[in-house]
Amino acid sequence: MGDTSGMRPAGPGTGVLPRPVGDAGRRVPVARPRAPRRPRLWFEVLLIGVSYWAYALIRNAVPEQRAEALRNADRVWHTEHRLGIAVERSVNHVADSVNWLIVGMNYYYATLHFVATVGVLVWLYRSHPGRYAAARLTLFATTGVALLGYHLYPLAPPRLMTGGHFVDTVQAHRTWGSMASGDLKHMSNQYAAMPSMHIGWSLWCGLTVLTLTTIPWARVLAALYPAATLLVVVATANHFWLDAVGGALCLAFGLTVARTWYGALPQALPRAALRPARA
Image (tube, rainbow, N blue to C red):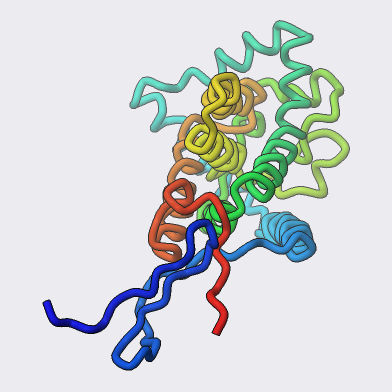
């Protein structure tokens, strides 16, 4: 009561940030999380292109510590046996027995993680500009911490295990299905299976669409996408179940970074981008 300070209201639908007003109409600074701004198309295209190039460059620059990666694969496989979840080989062999299914999975593994992720970013940019920056930060932070995992814990995928008896489905079916198999294997780090960014990115796509759309079929696809990706990465012998857990933990880190920076998770931010108030 009697306090003359307050907040200057913004006009309805203006999207202008309210500014605190002190005595004599003076604006005073206030500590608050960073507000999402309207994304600029040219900057976003450049940023995403450069970021994906840098991710591939750094990931593939990590030393291919073959001996350590194979020892870690044996440890992961042994751990999964102790947990009673070591069924990757059975899934791999069953999928490999159905030619059209495994060929489709090979192409899914090679392409959809990139196509779906870029598609969700474009959808956010167009339909949820106020949430775009926070969602993009989540994705970038998720990917960044994964690069650290590749360096600290080199891990061979199941298909490269010594005596694992897994089928390298790309090699077996002569499909263009992975940068880590066939003629392209020398262009990619063979021992960067932990964490699985196929899982990290698919979970990011699924959660983003699931929490921001009310269209029933889109929500169903969003829920199924991470599950289908998990089946594909295991069936093609590119990842263990525990690699998927690593990818989920990376996403949890990315969400924490975005929440800390913006003060809320992406879906809790305003749909429209905010404009700074004019002086």
